[in-house]
Image (cartoon, rainbow, N blue to C red; front, top):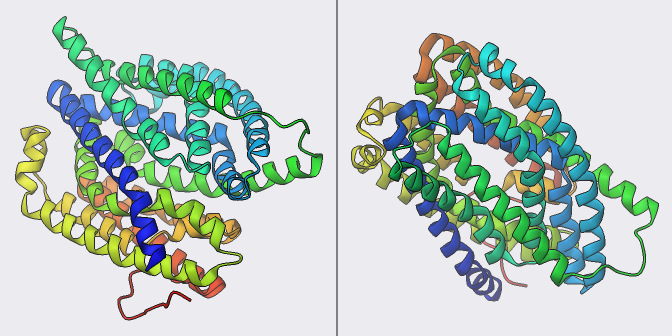
Length: 433
């Protein structure tokens, strides 16, 4: 009971900040969709996702390794070593991000005009290219703060700043009758700049370097582990974005915007899992080796709570779907079967619990990579075949199928390799011993 109470107490501020961030994010999406229509939200969706993909490549897994290493060092009170790992990661990340920024800037015109065949992307992609280094710095800083258990600050920077700056940018621009589709991307850029600068100086000010440099073996292990994680991360992010890219190439930017809104609404079902993962990632890393029974109990309690909440949220969304979709604009209140299919997949995702995070945090990246690669190959064919034949309906079926397939694989291997269950199982109980 003690571990449950402690977990709930530690989660309350994180949950509050995340929910507040979600509210602001959905207000930002509604403002974009009502001001610029489905094409405007489509341009923003593709641009922001490309930024997140390129940022993840620049990070090369170091952000997850930072969480793992820093959370362990923080537990041992080795505060100065914490800063050493941060400095090691930030130098490599900044160098890689500059290279990616230059490459993407050079190919931005080709990608906009010849691949996506939409000139609205040309300037947007150039802005995204310039943002990559700052986005990489902000992401590694947010995960560093999560590793040292400053969850509230980490989630504030992660979830509130960018949607808030987007809203402010749109409101200011509309006051001057300036309605370019590029405005939401400029808001994204402003938010990224603020986060990267603030978080960087916060870390430099509050965490000192140790007198010793990390030894060569430690550095090699850090980047070796990071690269293994990166391979899985890349497949996760790319697979999750694949449906939108196929829609942009084989359908229209308007349909990208339509799918984006329906997916955003359905993703509310993921809220319990996302909030719990913030706390569970370092907890899994800390308890897996020496306190397995506590981890069994934490996972079991976590699964029972988040699945129940997700199911309630899903039923509420279905019962109020017309009202919710009208909030984003009348054009989105159609083809609601797309929303229902995505909701089903998101609830199943929560049912399986933090299976992906569990594999990452317990050194089973190779298993996760294999599962992800299988699903990615399947996803490419399913998205292509279903989208070219069924358009938006095909996109929703492809997304749902891929999400369910991946979670089934992860849950099976978590249980087979480690003996842990991350999924909802009300029939199983663990004692506190």
